[in-house]
Image (spheres, helix red, strand yellow):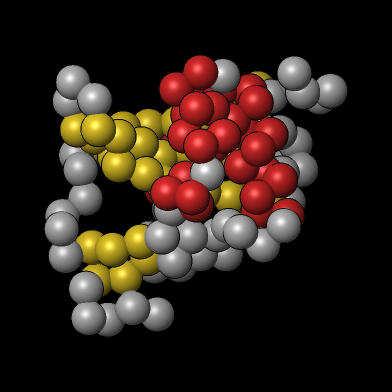
Length: 125
């Protein structure tokens, strides 16, 4: 378990995250509405369960706040890399332990495995 506990963003902070959300093709860190640091990171994947959805996680590496959301699956012409394709550990954490998942995602970002790269098919950046 995390030494420093993860906490959810407040409703006001979630609104700010939504208002300032960049396009998926932008991969850098962005400003955190809670602490003001440029440390908000993102991870997205297609979840194939009873219902297919796109799962999204955003977290601040500085103040350790996070949010998650679901949406419709991404269209087939939208492509992106997912480190879980090569990591059984990451796939297992996605379904088991949110706090450990956030720790793992943060470590992947620090190691340069994340951020993910997103593009429309034929227009990869």
